[in-house]
View 1 (cartoon, one colour):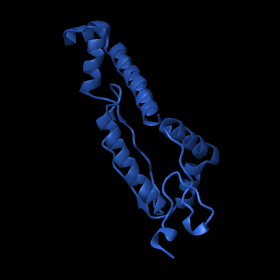
View 2 (cartoon, helix red, strand yellow):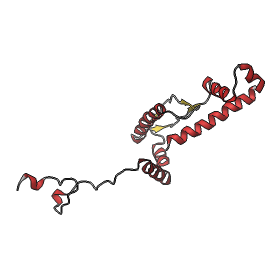
View 3 (tube, helix red, strand yellow):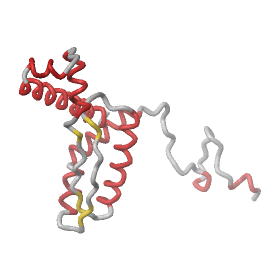
View 4 (cartoon, helix red, strand yellow):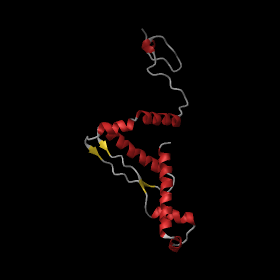
Length: 159
């Protein structure tokens, strides 16, 4: 028997010899990654995979990740997505290793940057503008901005 008789078939070639059959089924191209991701997310929701993992790990040794959250102030940038991906990776690894996690990723929902952006939205040029509007109204506008962008960033995280 020659060396060529036992070699794996070249791409596109078919064989009836089980010793030379490809190890994997062909993958269709192009791969629709966004559609595939949504199918996987739907499967996780329907099968309650996340809930079952939390139930399975309840009472096991805890592992906590203190997240330095992004500010819910603007759409998420790619650098935010990278950070969230790394944080998620660590948490998933620990959960799959049998640790009980809090899963408390979130948003920085207060502070100067939110206020600055609300001032820009309202066309304010000084702190006196805030006083004229009223502090309670200004605070409500800040809360509305945080809610708007935390919802957007959450949506961006699962697209």
